[in-house]
Image 1 (tube, rainbow, N blue to C red):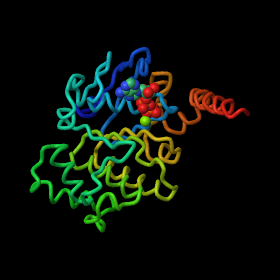
Image 2 (image 1 turned 30 degrees about the horizontal axis):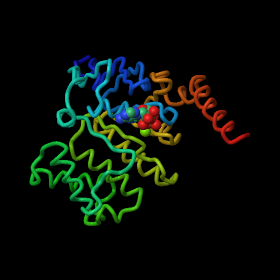
Image 3 (image 1 turned 30 degrees about the vertical axis):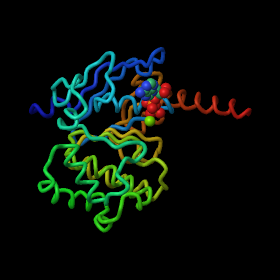
Length: 253
Ligand SMILES: Nc1ncnc2c1ncn2[C@@H]1O[C@H](COP(=O)(O)OP(=O)(O)O)[C@@H](O)[C@H]1O
Ligand SMILES: [Mg+2]
């Protein structure tokens, strides 16, 4: 067994963060390997996006440790973290509307990873093909439909050559056949060796697009295992049934 097999790509241990009295995360731990996609599910407000913000250095945890390839990166800043290999997409697409799809990808390479525009040009064209936007590279991002904006978000993150790709609801709001397009893109990314953390509410993505799923609820990583097993677990049932009962009550039923 070589070092790469022993050391996880990403190791997260006992992360915690509070905002005033709001103890959002109390203990989140997990490992991620290259060529692996870890799905993250959990109710709204559970702290999934906060976890990504800690991983990318936007937020500082009050406790815990983050290691990338065995190196402690817990205190590294946002741009340092991006250069080390953390890439992400945002829940609400952040592409520049007045720039073309191609230009947006270049921005991801130049500002996300410090590449020169010249060096980034050929990879950018390749990425556009990989995400299925090769034929629309000259279209302004603002003119693209939701699926294409979601594709572009992934492309911008890829342009920075991440080791770990963090997807925050990359398939949210899409139809079933559109979700299948995103699934195929993520599968190819994973097969290229990148480790993927995929936050999503869409069951289809967790069952068909991940190797393991983690339930994040009550501030902690509650269960983690094979997608089918986690989805069928007592913890998932309790967490989601609780949420549904709460909604029913709110609706007056
Ligand atoms: N920067 C912030 N300052 C204060 N509270 C925040 C901040 N970011 C998130 N929160 C709070 O953290 C909780 C979890 O939010 P979030 O991670 O967005 O949930 P989700 O699991 O739906 O992605 C919410 O109560 C939210 O209000
Ligand atoms: Mg969120």
